[in-house]
Image (cartoon, rainbow over the protein chains, first blue to last red):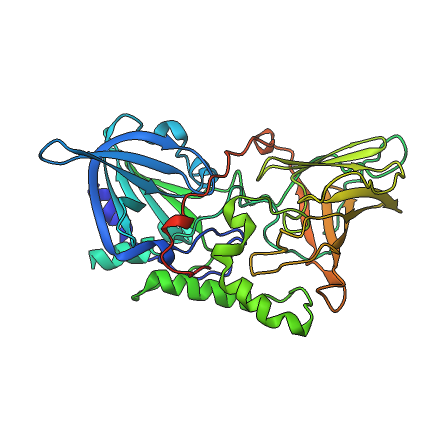
Amino acid sequence: MRQGLRVLNVAFALTLANVPALAHHSLFAVFDENQTVTLKGVVSKVEWVNPHVYLYLDVSDVAGKVTTWSVETFPPGTLRRGGLTRDKLGLGEPVTLLGYRARNGKDLVFLRTITFADGRDVVISLGDIKEVR
Amino acid sequence: MRTRSLLAACATVVVALGSLSQGQTPTPATAPATVTPTPRTADGKPDLTGVWGTGGGVGVPNSVQKGDTLVIVFQLEGADPFEGKNLFQELDRRGSARKAAAPNKPPYKPELAAKLKEASDLQSKLDPAFYCKPEGVPRMGPPSQIVQTPGQVVFLYEGRNTFRVIPTDGRAHRDDVEPTWNGDGVGRWEGDTLAVDVTNIIDESWLGPDGWFHSDALHVVERLRREGDTLIYNATVEDPKMFTGPWELTPRTLRLMRNPADALVESPPCIERSAENQVTNDHH
């Protein structure tokens, strides 16, 4: 995770000239950029669908009560092309993730980073890949 | 610093529907000089058969592996560093500016301006494609694959697992079917160009994501021309109830995709789950 966070210090940009025409919903309409949430739980379901892949995360509180969070991310084609196939999304495993919480207060986040049980991190980003290398 | 960097990095995440590589970027109509001869079928027509793409998808890396960290990037060419607040809103603002500055828009009648603005403003509520309905003709653009046989041409579209069967045997439009998202297309050869005349398109579809509605009078003529390993796609769109005149789509140039990895695969289904969580009408 530490390594993943270092990657975040790369500056990304908002230049939209090359954003594909088929963008889906506004992030602002759904998520709060000022409210990041760190969640630890077990991936109970992977929904490999367009226009967004969803993970479902079972999070237990100290009393053992389980809350299932919805975790929205890129479309399947984008994840797959980046090497994150459906079988690498941690189904049934404990993960730690960081996301932006939904503005309507639901247990819903947009995925920013996720750390899997085997130590792999995935960072979801947007920008010029040349800046990331 | 850490929080701000997190925001800067994540605020810009834009999510797109399905395959992003197929013909999304308008390109000039002029085909590059080629020495590859255009293959022809037994009847002497150009053979359009093949997988056609821009080459921008499969095969172009969109991730970087750094140690145990995989960074998956939604590519924005030449993106400049951005530091600021209200990044999510800024993303929308720039998206709206980009759409407003689009160089080639349908020529709507002036009296439709208010209705058009309303549709554009409410895109995230009204755009059928947002809700996983088909894009339809002509919004979905050129096919991802063409299969040409005597008397018919089949268009395949990977993004939404869509097909069109276009007869080229001289038959007329059929009059026994309901309006559909892709309409009723019949093909004819204009020299070496395949022209597909499309009518009976459902009036529910949009011509683009910026509120571009149309009427049941929509008439589209798509033209496809192969030059070697290049395919040029044009379309003329007429809607006498909505437009002041014909609208020529920005031509697209595709190239033949020979890599086995470019073979079409079934797209995962489109299931819209975000709309109910939108607390504003903001959109790109």
